Length: 87
Image 1 (cartoon, helix red, strand yellow):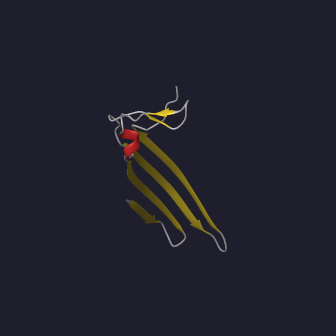
Image 2: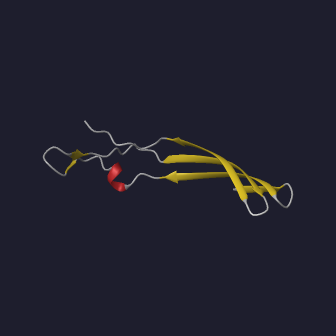
Image 3: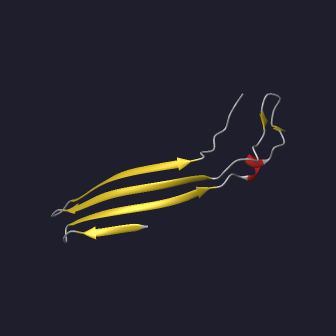
């Protein structure tokens, strides 16, 4: 979702929000170990939850004669981030 507010012909603010989901792949859920070498064994976790990411962005645009200046602030927060563990 994006909102844009035009102050005048040369200046504007924008506000954006985005929510994404990243689901675990099949091999990440497989609980049975698989060996790719003598020392490397991979085993998935069937209890993995999807990762949700919420992103917020606030921007400002200023058009000058032959120059356009743009600035923005960006923030993202993720929950249940999937990571690989080596032991």
